[in-house]
Amino acid sequence: MRIKEASKATGLTNHTLRYYEKSGLIAPVPRDESGHRFYRKHDISWLHFVKCLKSTGMPLKDIQEYAAKVGDANNQGEFLLQIMQQHKIRLESQLTETKEFLTHIDWKINHYQELLAEHQ
Image 1: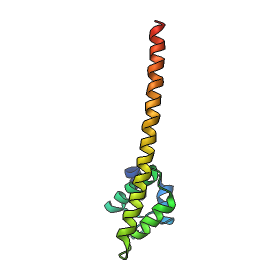
Image 2: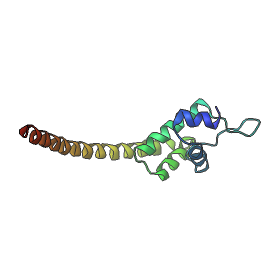
Image 3: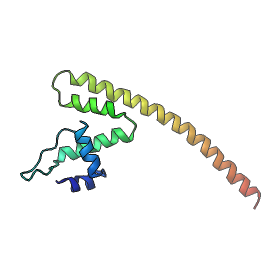
Image 4: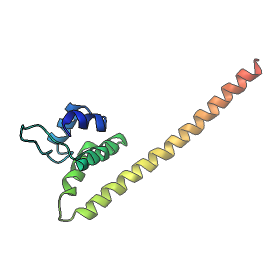
C-alpha cells in the first residue's frame, strides 16, 4: 500500500511515517517502479508495534536500538528480551501509580456525590 493508505491504516501522518523511516524506527520501505514507498503487511504490523511502544512511553532511542537489533542475526535475543522486560517494568510501575491515582479520584467523586446528596 502507498503512504496515504499506510497513514490511514496506522493513524500516523505521512510526515511521521517518513520520519520513522529516516530515523531508523522502521526498516527502509521498498519503493515501486515510480519511486513511491510501498508498505507491506509486515511494515504495517511493525508500525503498529512502534506506535504501541511510543504510546506507552518507550524513549525513541530505545525503540531505535530495538529496531536495529531486530534485523541483526547476532546476539539479538538477549537484548530484545532485556529491553522488553525493562519496558514492562516501567509500565507496571506506571500502572500501579495510575491505580493509586484512580483510588484517590474515586474517593473525591464519592465525597462530592455525598455532598450533593445531602443538599437535595
